[in-house]
Length: 49
Image 1 (cartoon, one colour):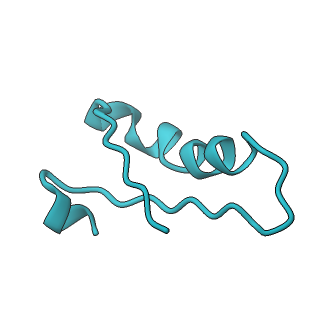
Image 2 (tube, rainbow, N blue to C red):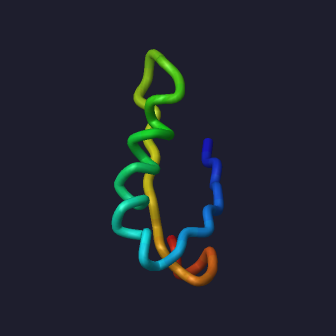
């Protein structure tokens, strides 16, 4: 199953926000399987993947 989210982040804040997003998203629930969150950066979905 794949879910995608779009966040708008100022370029100046990108290096601060980028490592935190997967950490926060992966910790929202306790599951029997790992909850994996990856990040990508780009001006559109294709570039971010």
